[in-house]
Amino acid sequence: MINLIILSLFYIIFPMFLIWLTIKYPVFKKIGAIVLAYATGIIIANVGILPRGSEGFRDETVGKDRAFIPKTEISKLVSEGTITQRDIRANNVAAIQDNVQSALIPLALPLILFSLNVRRWLRFSGKGFLSMLLALVSVMIIVATGYLIFRNKIPEADKVGGMLIGCYTGGTVNMAALAVALNVEPNMFVMTNTYDMIIGGLTILFFITAGPAVFRFILPPFKAHAGLKNENPDIESAGKELAEDFEDFTGMFKKSVVLPLIGALGLSLLIFAAAFGVSIMLPKVPLLVSVILTITTLGVAASFIPKIRQIKKTFQLGMYFITAFSLVIASRCDLSVFFHVKYLNLLYFVTYAYFGSLILHLLLSWIFRVNADDYLITTTGFVYSPPFVPMVAAALKNKDVILTGLATGIIGWIVGNYIGVAFGMWLDKI
Image (cartoon, rainbow, N blue to C red):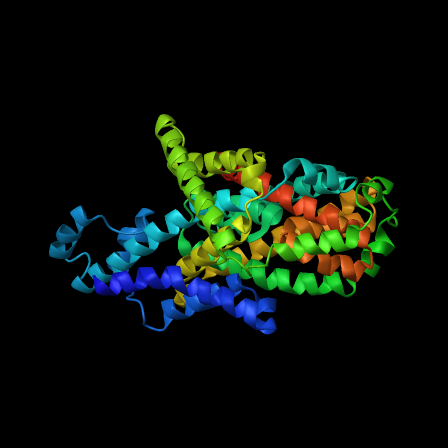
């Protein structure tokens, strides 16, 4: 029991340490708290710190699409010899992991959404809105065709498709939410996200080096949007300030910040409870699907209330929970299956989805005469999320597109969960 309490506290406290590292040391800031959380989780899962279940235990959990074995079944399975006494400890750890993991995303989502000014970001999307729509269409077409190619080669290919839709419209935040909503097996989630990080890291390097020249050779040149300049004469400084604020955790423990944050956390708990109540009234809808979509809807609705939207650091508190979620789910990852054929096929699926959607988006942008800078900045906002936008805008040497990229990323956070859930459920039907 003491070990389980220590494990629970580790999942809650260690993400704070990781965030502190990113604040204190520039090298860790470049890596990011979420990547550090994944790395830590994978290490502790695979060096013998946490107990690993037998093949029989895996058959009774992963094989039956459940995270752990209920206590009512444990004694019977042990007496039958299906699982061993050592598996009881592994099952207790799995139960803690599943319960903590299941609570973190429902708490994180409202907090992330509270700070979003939806009307403002829709206005700032400007001419980039067409590029955003083309990006969305591209992702859906490519993921659907990828599913048809790989559905017999990858377990839960429909759920992976739903996650990829969320990932390429809102980054890790939406991917994590959809992993919960679609009840994705932990190994599958971690491997999908790991492959995405590797491919995404290489792609962003291309975006900030040769990318601007390549895309400007293919697509029309950018023309300044006069409306945006009238809206905010200092677009560059405003955009950079907003983007940097997404990663600014400083000052969270000041009394003037902590007390309102506690209130925001309380509101997030109320939204979680309300979403659970709604799910009970919709018995034909999968529980986690109705919970995640209701939370998303109520979180966006709450953002329209100025007093809630103006609470400082709600986004950062939400990202703390996302970091903790990353640590928990990575600590359930078994690297011994890393080179299993199904995960190699998963790599092919992720690669196809990533580059296929970028190329199709590029083709559609060429057909509809979307300019090169809007194409690149909306792609960045969608796939990588708002914090990456200023870096790509700097590579473009174009300050006018910063707010367009931020707007695209924020709109992606909002719509990604709805589209990802709908798409994942639709893929399961075809």
